Length: 252
Image (cartoon, rainbow, N blue to C red):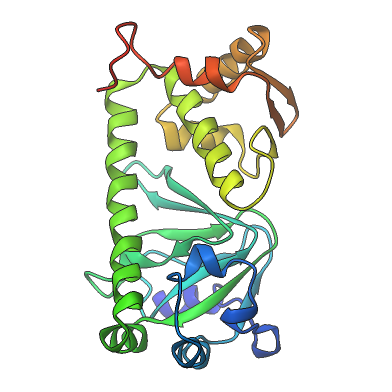
């Protein structure tokens, strides 16, 4: 059964798509700053061909063997797990410049599904070879540890979000997080297109679809955002941030 599943998962592999890391406009997000040219050449030789995925296609599924991590070169992904009652629980959203696949490091099996939310492209990075190379290049090893640490911090943030925040606070935190990530990629911090559905947002935030829709409507009525289908314009970032700050000014 597992073998049959994997036949439906394998994305298009196109070695011709490969662009040297040194020439990629996302290198500052994916790679450590200041790699020597010789080290960059070694890293270039390590990274496999690009993979293109159509919207809705799986990059990998829970239970697949772990061999590589993936740098998102273009597009948008979600990760999810199947709950005991048969629901898909969204665990994260990943965009260009971010890493997918680290969930498989500990058990050598992927523990979640990764699905393209739009036509996307990733760079394949064999993990065993990356570990060996990072043991020889200290800055690469340090960067790899930072990426892993970010995953832990993100998980803690989601736990806090689900455990302590009201619905509108959760949505505000979600929109502000997207704004910061788009800004880091040179895009507008106040206008962007949501690749995920409101139902997927609700799954990630631990909210029902109706609650997410009400929160969006409330934000729009209050002049915090403008919404046109999936296009979002944040009209008042300070007020949106204020929703996350207790009246006494302390956070946490």
